[in-house]
Image 1 (cartoon, rainbow, N blue to C red):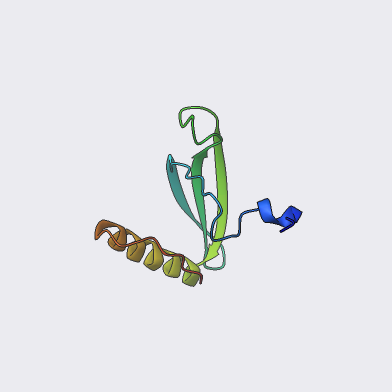
Image 2: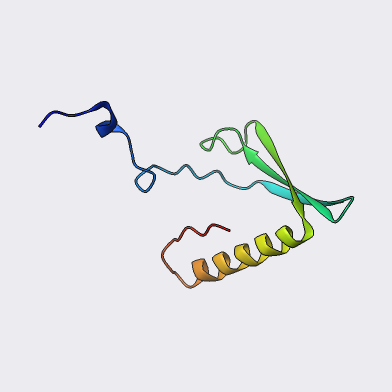
Length: 89
């Protein structure tokens, strides 16, 4: 059977995931019920003590609550040893 160029590409379910350790985070309130979440990540996942990248995410208050609840559920499931899942909101 002939192969196509697409045969060598991973499907989203099979794609390799690179995990970057969370070095730090901060939250700030913004006008109009906004929240700024800043995540501090290493540029290179293999060198967490090297250069840093700051990811700024702006959220409304309700979105912040939803994210917090989702993170809490994921942490609880992880502590119980449940298999990883992907949850979209």
